[in-house]
Amino acid sequence: MQELVPAKKVAINGIGGLGRFGLAIAKALGAEVYAISRSQSKVAELLEFGCKDVILSTDADQMQKYANFFDIIIDTVSAVHSLNELLALIVPQGQLGIVGGSPDLTFTPFMIIAKDLNVFGSMIGTIEDTKAVLQLCADNKIAIPVEIIKPDYINDAYERVLKSDVKYRFVIDIDELRK
Image (cartoon, rainbow, N blue to C red; front, side):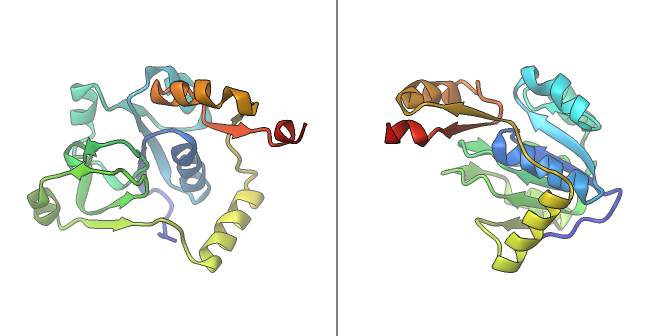
């Protein structure tokens, strides 16, 4: 598990289920947290949650305001996208964590080289990491909102995912399958 120290400036890019957990965990570890999202609809809720700011990735002026600002950015986006805009926001010798599983990412390697950035990825941690995160979540009462759906709503839910109309995860009610 990547270590955070208090007062580190951490941004999470992509505020779906994984991103929302990332914000909560970074906050519980003492980081100053920021959200990067393309969705204006989540701004008020994320500020109320405790984010210092919510940066709209579609707003070039907002992105420029945070150039060379973050110690760590965790990218949770699973869609095809460019990392260049995120790399510009990280301080020299900062870190970029990629956990979203995008099928295709583009970036300019020189941006990583010039700033001496550490780029890491993770699909799943060790058993010890998992236990530590679960304990951290239990100790800090970390959970994310979910929308419980019936199995016959799966296609509609998928359409909503494509439109970014989810806060923050769908959970299928398996008991409905047993009926």
